[in-house]
Image 1 (cartoon, rainbow, N blue to C red):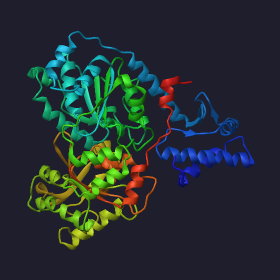
Image 2 (spheres, helix red, strand yellow):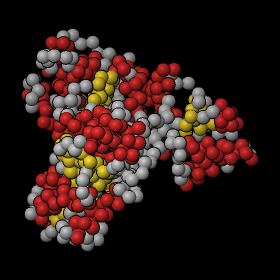
Image 3 (cartoon, rainbow, N blue to C red):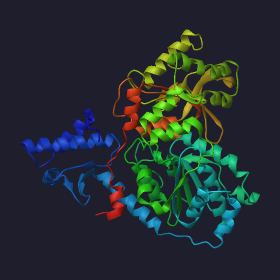
Image 4 (cartoon, rainbow, N blue to C red):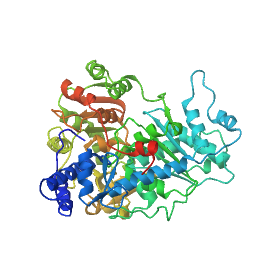
Length: 543
């Protein structure tokens, strides 16, 4: 947890609620309340549990609200304190994954098959082929790697090889944590199937539709439960999850719980990216715990040059080297010069012109999506809210926008709440524009993962926010041609090397940073550390 945490009213209310029910008085009650405030705050910061001292363990057990077997609201395991629900999530996930690890698939002639899908390279080990061999032989496989290392290319070949090895066609599901990530995976999968060295019949058995994990599991808002679970498992023989670093402990646990007996699971992701917004660092933990089930793709086929050099330097916490790359002012990678808001406004002109020209939404969406501003913080100077407001005002002063209220022509928005009934989910991006079929009435258009376009009355769209700029957390699973990264004027606990690495690796062509040397180097020097018990549960087993 942060050395200088900020406790909110919910932390305090939670602690007081339980302390009133504890068998403690006086200073012991105050000390108990302090531990619970830290636990609640840590949960909000993404920790599964809280590290506690021996004295705190004795205090908690004396409260009558904590035990070591998971029957009371608080659970103590070694030197860790959990809310009961998260203790059960960790135990259940560890137990389910251990069971999956026992399933092996000894196929004959796999090398001959893989030779066709992965022709021999002139030099070096073919990491993609090794990943495929691992995935074919085991029911649980984790494929990690940075941008452009070929995770999607590899998994498409794995799907084809598995279909070829199967007596009957496998029923396969492709999923991602967000609609944006699902759309990217679908585009990538669809573009690679035609090139596979197999029959058209086999190709037809490889799915091209990608869904979100919430849709796959059958979300039941506003409850935290899903239609599919251990009692009503998914029908799929194989589930592939992209951008797995974004999947939190609870969602990963519910996914694994919903797999039918004998099903395979392939997780794809970049272990060096930000951990999930909610609790846990599941992908990073699993790559540490399960080296025999993990393979890292190490050769980048798309992502190179100074952007890769900068990302690598940040990831390795080489702050001086990273800053030097920015100072060199490479065409691909540099500090942003000039007026930030003016630069942002200029980048919006293409999609606004297309709207005014009556272009198809697909073209408008692509034009908007070529450039994005990524901020570390939501509020304050250089935060998302500040930059979005300034950009609106700048474009309005240039007569590019008419700010006629909350919903104006050209307003880009990001959905921030799931609405399963409307098939709109947190992270979906839409644009407010005239509907040609309704005499120019303003509607909000969204591009779905299957390429279709959906439109909604602005009043029906779930809670959303303007998105000329977005947080780096929200950009996970996205990719843009050009990215501007904006850091605050002073360092804060949000700024970490994982955050900066994630932002840099969203860019395909150019990266521009708004920061100074002090804040930049402090950011590179800070690393995310999440308190979890998942690694320990694999090493020592659940209690």
